[in-house]
Length: 295
Image (tube, rainbow, N blue to C red; front, top):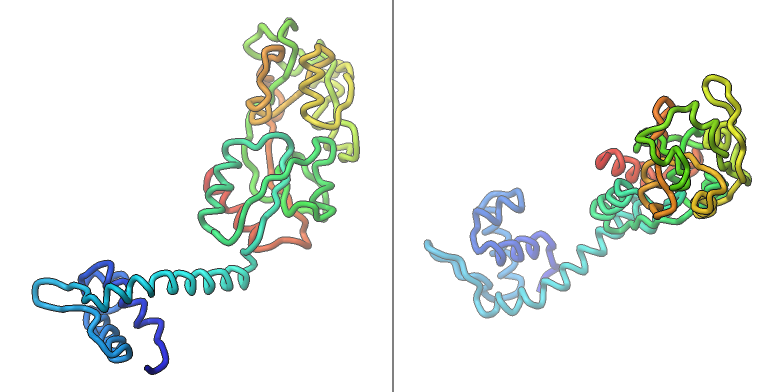
């Protein structure tokens, strides 16, 4: 037998599924006569008839049925090998590590699913990062990209897709007077001790998450500082202070002792994708596009 021609094998497998030369040609983007030529060439190579052709129907011969059964898994393995090499060549193979502060939002999980469907040789892996260190993991290369509360003012990092822009929520103990309100104003923050963030987070970022004065200049009492969201929610539940949160975070931390009150008049909370300027990859760009698609 002469050397194998992959195009002949592909044409035979498609024809075996369709049992129609016209439809097989449409799937292969060739003419019906070209499918017939490819099949005839393959039959000459194997030395036997694989398909019975009449004016009314197309059917596999016993030899053709046996050949399909043996060829399909081998062709699938070959196709997977080629796809894998192509993915590696495009920089789209392996895991994409995504750092997340707290629990992921529904939009983020939808983006991960879309990314995995689009790029089966990649895998979006969510990694929890500390509230107190939003940019450190991507600076140190522990993750490829982070989903963090904004603002972001690091010169060596890139801000990609921005999403989940919503009014901020104030987490207060359910016995607090503000818990009975449908909403709060920025001036109402002077009535609570606002829990802050400790650790290596930049000062500008920590101040954005825990204000020290209201827009009118009233001082906002400082509550304890925390390093994680769980610590902060735990202190609110113990009536040790209040905490400003974004909607996705509040949704995943509902508990009877804590009430989330919308704060009108403050800048909306925003989540953003951030990655290192010197480590931007095809995977990172593709994930940002996936977030844009579901947002």
